Length: 570
Image 1: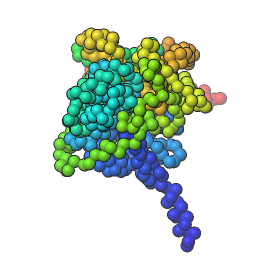
Image 2: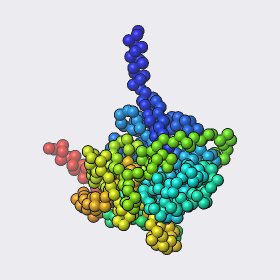
Image 3: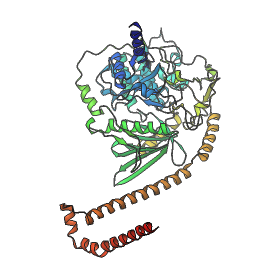
Image 4: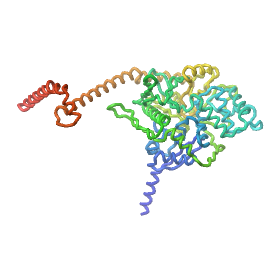
């Protein structure tokens, strides 16, 4: 009896798994879940811990054993999705950026979105010109350290804090000036709200870039925002497509298709190539979810989407959750005492240092202030800090797709990468914030031409590493050679042409087969159906039946009898 109880308790322990979720302030929440627990259960536990009601904007990220990042699906088992050994490690992040973050009902929600956008600013996903960068950083200063105090904040105090991947002394002085003169008296909640209002106006607000290549082999980044789909190349936004213009999202292998229907019956198909099939499928899922969340009026309008073509089995996916309009209506009905927000107890970030926790880069000499030194960190410990959706390593091509994977595993903790301002280019670097002053005129001119320009670069593996310029050039050559040797654009086009011909042939044969069945039913069956009766009574069908079909049937019957007689004789 005792052994049976012990075996039963051991089996129950085997069905329980420890989960650690890294929060936006870099603190950690640890819990235990059952083997068959759904993602919704874990997410509800987390939101209860945070005292969060407006939770539809958030999600949980994880990295699978192939180093591909995913959003946790709430309708499926957590254990089956992760496919890794416990304990499980995940990240709590903003999944759907609110179109108007200042309109969020509760301060706790605005604070969490503020933390996410602060991370985006630090890691270069939120691009802005220098004047906007100074204002955003000053809002962060005011929210975290309060009013300027000469006794506590000596000359150059802003240089001890890091708000962006890199910035100059001039920008540091501008940040301190705004903090001293313009923001005095603002509470943390007010500063955070002003920060959100300013961030919302930036062109790269809500951008979560997915690295791809276009049909010419040029690097591009695809992203989904509250307002539509964007394609970024270098420091230019080459496409911006509103959600109501996107008619279909599809993928086949590593190829991603976007079907667009614009004014005057103009239809466009955009084609891009992801580094791996898994990355392409993740890109497709993100697009399906973002389109459903921002475009639809009701969650009842959500439909299951398939990536397959006719006669081909593909992936099926359905967004599960409320849409943006429903979330806003539900938020308006919230009636409770505002929950307490603990801003002072933030845990120091290993990837995104909070300004309240020590110097920005104490090891950087003043004489080299124009260069940024960032240690290269590797491994799952750093991966879980990331809020980016890009695959960290291509399972098909090893470490050659992303430049930052160039660093050696053995000496990753000792190496540093240096990118100087003089050699900085948004197309070559993963540190794009803020925009240089001399490019402001070009930005304003481009905004007049095509709406806006923006620059975004791929997030580094650990949100704290970057390659040297020489590494980027070398890997660019390797990548071009790899693309030529493994299915370049020409080979891709030939393969697509062959598949198109095969599909056309199959569709034609299928239609002929259906027509033949319909003809046999019309001529040989005695079904007294109004539809068939009307067709049989037409003069054209009677002429076809007696002049063509009957002689053809007699000919086939004669041939069949001849073949049967030969078989009998033999």
